[in-house]
Length: 207
Image 1 (tube, rainbow, N blue to C red):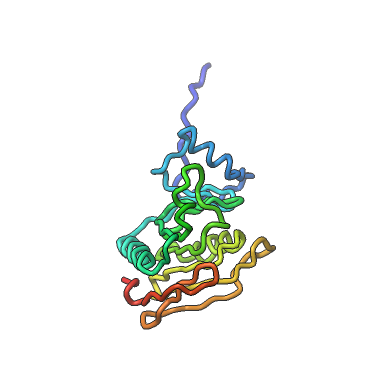
Image 2 (cartoon, one colour):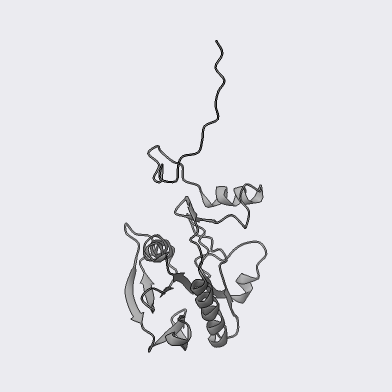
């Protein structure tokens, strides 16, 4: 008697959320190779965080609005030679996050051979609505480990900005040593390489 093999259905949405089997971490080089060979493309909703392929969060209209406002406001105050990008990669030792906003020197942003690295980026901004837990957790840890000097979270549920500075760099528990919050009536200092270059009124950035 012959038994025809049946295709295995994918797990239901509530199954396998956290794998019980050992899973494999990717290096940044492997992640790039997957993109180079078409296994991943720019439309795939994933980014590499600490070696894991992590699904990007859905962007709701307030997220897009605040991302655009922050980018445009930074463009108005940045000195010559600096460049603002939105949702573009930063290549780190074990991650390649795509922050909602990043600030880097213009010559690095225009380099056709590589994405900016941690030594290039002066400021990153994540706009958080449903992603607040990730932006305060994994993303903050990734940026602190890499030594990104200034990290902003636009906290939409609580209508404030969280500004983190003085990263520990590689450590057992990477984090930022200083944390300041700015509400709708405050102005957020823009600091690049330790120099304050301007202020942004939080009320003009929040939805």
